[in-house]
Image 1 (tube, rainbow, N blue to C red):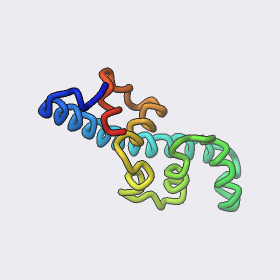
Image 2 (cartoon, one colour):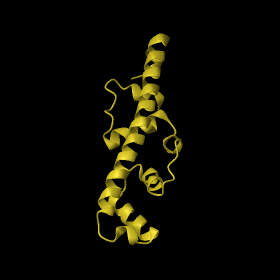
Image 3 (cartoon, rainbow, N blue to C red):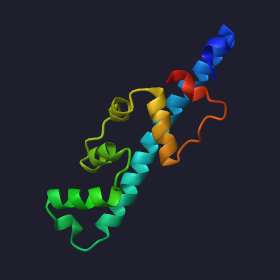
Length: 120
């Protein structure tokens, strides 16, 4: 979809929708990180002796459990109880980035009409 061919009011509405989707995607990523951290921590802590391991070994097991997630940095911050309110927005700096990560995580659907491309 080419934004230049749209009337200004329609273009403004589409951009506003895409920005709103970006904000929603960011919040959904934050919720996913919190839930995924809780799930992974629960699985690992259910293993006998996990809590007695040195932090470095716990970190290695945690890294293996989360794999190559697009939000691995946020999950590790959550593991260390260092995840702040703005960490997700610092990592996912733009609406298209937040939407892309949220789509890859399966917490939002791709835009049906291509609104997201207007922000790229």
